[in-house]
Length: 404
Image 1 (cartoon, one colour):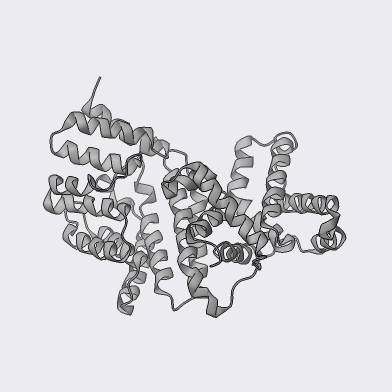
Image 2 (cartoon, rainbow, N blue to C red):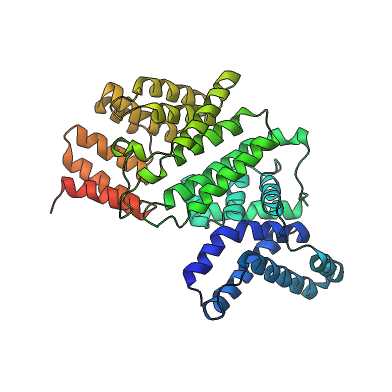
């Protein structure tokens, strides 16, 4: 027998790969997704009583392909016999190199320049990451309904424009790279955030994002931004063991036990950062990686070079301006110029409803002695926290201010 949690774990690990394999032969993204979703529905019914198959991913792909064949049979106008034959004679997608190749191909297809940039990113997150529309909407700070419309329009555009399913030629890669890297980073962030308090139940997303980025750097070795993103994720990943307590509650950077940081990941990340800096063509991921490198090389929180971090955020804000960048910059400004100066920055951002905004504002108000206002901000942050670990941390801060 297998539990519903086992089915959910297979979904997280195999959903994107299964869609990639089925889409390779159907050439219809909507049909591929529907077939895979139906296969997981069947798994949810059968596996709890029949037990987990020896190769769950292959089982899902086979079942999904059969569902697609059934659909083609019902829709004779689509050339069902030919499509059925193609599906049935296709390999099972379980070869040693299919997993990586298929996902990367589908990532590039979702990031086709014919689609608007936000639509490319949202569609790829939905298909490759297996994320819900609500999770994707949260990453973009928009409503679930707005995000659902973006994804639907992107799928319709792919179908109606007959966008080809193939890795673009070398000359076409650069125009897709920005969207591809954005998708990879958002997949990583979803896994990194959701991991807190859930016993690593989405940690596989982080590993998949890092794997994809390594593949992209091999595919495009002259693109420093892909190396910058890889460095950024490795340096973030190096702190995984230290960022949560025994019950999953978030441990902020300043309070982490640095002896628990992964030295091998730090060394690899720093090597990539140094190589990027030598190239002299800085982009947003390289700058973010450089900021993480300052944290990684500081022997303690008190010894962190906050002035350097502020300068790096200044450069990042000039290159990729946005309220989230300014919010992160404000955290560094507080260490250099004080909480009042940082609060002036934060209050101009208009990020109401974003849990990090309320958490940062609460911390600044606490430092300024405005405890009732700080408590209100922590309460708001806790209500919108995306993971149990972050919520536990924020509620602990709230209890310190309002013990009752």
